[in-house]
Image (cartoon, rainbow, N blue to C red; front, side, top):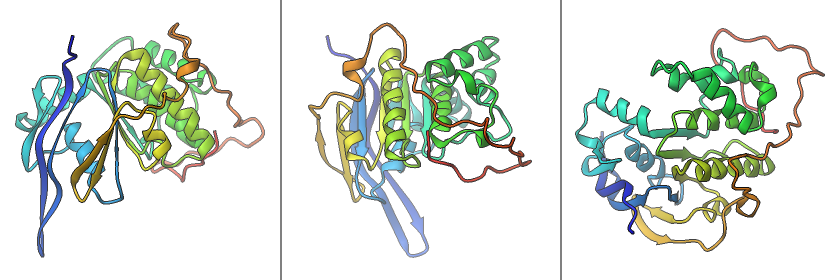
Length: 273
């Protein structure tokens, strides 16, 4: 039986007007993604990867063409309707984590469901932080967490709404190699357990090879598509019982003084686990 697509992109182009003329960022892009499938969008810097991700997620509108997500044609919806679709069906993971510096880890994860008035917000957030190995970091602020820990908080936040599709923009771009592998193992585990589709933008060829499909862009066009044969990160270790292997935390706050928290802004990120 054919699986219906969660995402369909039809002849999408994105053009910007600037002082010297017209800049075409994306040119006639078409593809679809089945429910629960994984896909990587790759290509050189400036080829339109992040722009395409934003259009697919309803963060921007195409100049021409259409994007259909879970049977909703995004480019014809009002801003309020787009926000509802995103909050109902979509999860996001960003390179820069995008955690709120004045909230603790558990409070950051709670934000999406609190906006919906869900009384289970805290219980759901605590459960997800346990599953990503941060049971001992619930009350820590972003400044007290390593880069890998912050990205794990961001993963928990992305999945708390039980999204149908997750968009990840360079999710390991600010992490070292060892931490990147741990974070991506968690991302693929969560994806498998929840049956969530995944669209991943990355410069990391090894990471792209873990997805079921690679879409390669150049100059705003799709120049190739391929289906890697390699198994995904951690697939052989998947225990299939709904549990996630907890990565041991190597960073500790017990040997350092309690940090001061700024009223606004967030300091530079560390990259240890």
